[in-house]
Image (cartoon, rainbow, N blue to C red):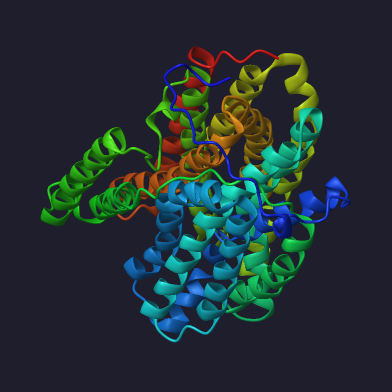
Length: 472
């Protein structure tokens, strides 16, 4: 149930008769289309990571330029997700999902043909915009199309794909880069996207449309504010906090994010209704998502560096090294619906945070002499199990706390927390790494970065234990 201070949504407009897909499709087929779109989007948060050394050589990029190939995607994605959630509410979620997949497919094709760094950067930003349109509608389509235990089971699959997407991307990136070229990490999206575009209108039923306006000013302020914040954090890692550009970016971030809060407070139909952050369980779930994603994605970045630079793994072997994490996450998430029905969300989220923190603390003691079996295997299993336990109860708690007409906005905020957390976590850990490795000891910098990730997971644990109250 929504809280008493939440705004009442306008009555929905029913989907046009011609928009409704056939209702005879089995739930498994419907879920496969939704999850396929989510997997394609999730993979691109990391599939490029393994290929970055080849991209750098192929396009002659600097290290700073290379970092922005990754950040352009995640910042556009995280910054515009709220607007994407509103688009699904206003135009219908199937329409928004299909439009996002179409743009994502076209941007991937352009990225594969990129001849310059600027071209590739623009393609990555376009992919992020497309993902921001499609992703909130994917989660909201599950809320609209599944009820009761069927929704919990569907969310368990969706959560597994969301959580494991980054690790699967590492594997896929290694295979494609070593077997072909870095360009194939973009081209692989084209056949997947075309298949989804053919299937979605036939399989997915259109949802009711909730009339509303687009809060473009709020979306622009939040996106630019997050971009300035990430830039300031990355710049501080190399130039220090006293650097003029670091200070300017920090000031711009504070001003833009404050402007975003003011815009949302006054807007008649804000892109992020502030009441979404007021419900105790919902707000706690959002914060835990932010902290856990910050911990895990930042760790993925440095694990890739350790595998390729310290252990001297090639792209394929480095990608395959993430298989135990993916397998563990999928195994655990299959048990999560039963565990949540018996114990509730809080014990699962807390246990997941403990496992992620333990895995990252283990990694913080890595040394150059540690091999895969002795240094990485157990932490991979711990992080995979922790992510698998926590993601489903968080998503289920968020969706259960809102009415159907607000599920797009709630889903948009959830996805924003995930991908903004990924950007912020990576930026903070890169900054910590830069300071700790300032004397030339790269391994000391990695250990400090992993310890910082463990701190993010510990913060998630505290929120889960002290704030979350959801019962079975």
